[in-house]
Length: 71
Image (cartoon, rainbow, N blue to C red; front, side, top):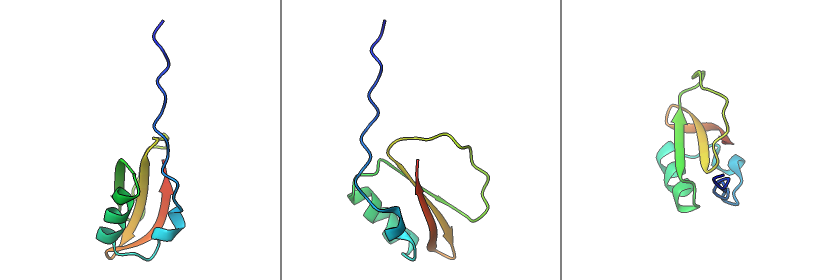
């Protein structure tokens, strides 16, 4: 039987700290803090609900982060 893979550790970060930042600056900051996947989405985008370790999501309206969550 193959070993169960260990998911990557989540960066120790506060998603709320990205709200209000310019989308480009928020992405640079997230990558510098260790997020392997950074996803920027327009408001109301339909997405699947699977959790992905190491991913941070930004809802971006008019080039500004309005909401942020992990997974």
